[in-house]
Length: 113
Length: 115
Image (cartoon, rainbow over all chains, first blue to last red; front, side, top):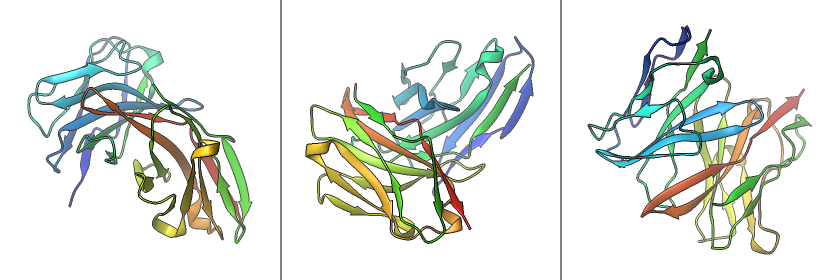
């Protein structure tokens, strides 16, 4: 089954404690993204990757890092989380051309205390 | 970059009534437009997409959308709402970006279906 998986689904942490949210896709997609979803703001792109070792900032990259060492995986790293990063996070992948739809993971709900 | 406006962050309809969710985009080039649906505690999934083949696009679950260039709109409709349609709906526009795509989402519209 074609899918995007994320782990963990729920995470409660404290300010400053480094964390990683994993994302994996099994569709051999070149393009992967991370979004955060906040009430009233819709989805905002954090980072995206066009291929292995190629990443770039989205609209709200501050406080986040990513890496793309393998085509299927695109982890999101918060090195020093703060309460304003409390949000619902989605990983997505697509074939990458302008007319391709994105496939989304189930989401990770992060709370930073 | 393009922008997407969804009028009405919350829409309520009675079961069996027409569903109309509005989406307007700004674009200086022909756009690629998408509607996604998000059910509670789930990720987004594609409802339908416009890629210039036909102005009236049919999607899953009886939804359809009409691309109107003169109005820069891509409104989503369904003739008769079901309780299972209660969800959040996102309009999105895709544009070429460095050989790939940049996707911009609207803020979403939560649809409530009243029995």
